[in-house]
Image (cartoon, rainbow, N blue to C red):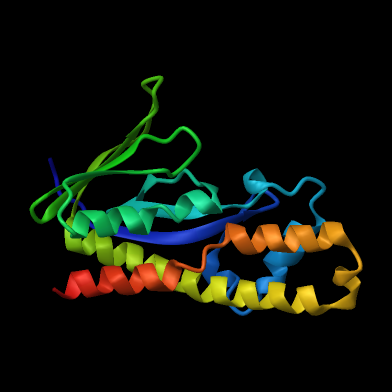
Length: 193
């Protein structure tokens, strides 16, 4: 199997439009206000994830709930710690499998129906880790900004008077894990070893 060069980016879905995380840095209210105006706010409406490329061609373009995208780094860390095969919950019915063999890693997602969501691709493992870390750093920064924006809204009398608005803010705070920075640091330290 040919070994390909990995790259990745993180994007959100806003009104069905793909928005790269870099376009939201410094503008957390853009996403927060979008979520708050939705009629039905649930985990299924908080959409975002990694787009992974192999030799600059999309290898994995499925994104789903933001909480699912947060499963990538722990899976990568487990591979770095010596596990040979891990699963990533990329989307609702994902069977994404990452298999490490020495310095190489294969990635594949085949739906239980047999439909291929991500054809098997092979990357140099350390390059894949670096690509995912590169795509994760802006997300970690954005999550900090997003949590700060939520905290400001939670102090705003316009919101504190409305229990539904406060419930939505609490829900969004929980949907965006504050673990990104710690997971990035852990993976970086394992990469340096």
